[in-house]
Amino acid sequence: MHRAALGIRVHSGWGALVALALHNRSIEILDRRHITITGTIDNGASQPYHAARNLQLSEAEPFLANAFEAAHTAATAGLRDVIDVLRRQKYRVTGCAILMAAGRILPSLDRILAAHPLLHTAEGQFFRDAFAKACESNAIAISKIKERELDYSLRKKHGRDAARMKKKVQLLGRTIGSPWTADQKTATLAASLLLPSPKKISKSKRLAREK
View 1 (spheres, rainbow, N blue to C red):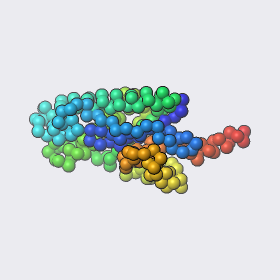
View 2: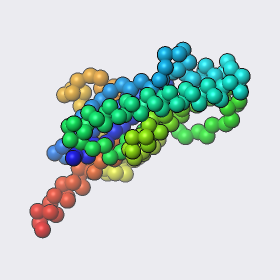
View 3: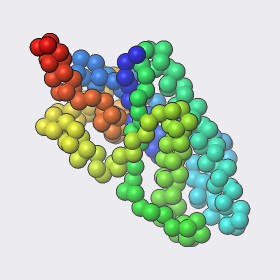
View 4: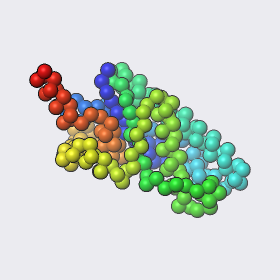
């Protein structure tokens, strides 16, 4: 089985997922899809905290817990489908990179529901957590990567090759077609951090030949 990595950029109620591997020292896109994880068609599914602010606190807590369980169930099923598709292609998923926000610590639920900006922050964390738990349910190792630190992480792993890799990822849409938006590009770069560096692979092969 070959190694594959997943990258997910999360939005409210869904995530842009990309699966990739290294082939001849180049990134190969194996799968890409939009995974909806609202788990229900209720009006509050994609914005659960916005819906919960109209409830009493005693009602909001179980409402959010039920919404999270629905999102987790949907995310688990979506990831399982990707894993099955890749397995049929002889690929094994070795990890998933989930792009994170700045990492602001959220206050208590009553304070979240009273401040509109916090509703959006909480919902972003809500759906990222749902994907993270879905990875655990599918026995996939998770790497949480702050999006604002992605460039630094790429330079740390790939050194001077980081800029070249970013340019190649930007241009992949020309060969694989749409959709190839910022979501797919960013998810791809995050997932690339979970795969061996092409330079290290080349060095390992050279050392093996010398032996």
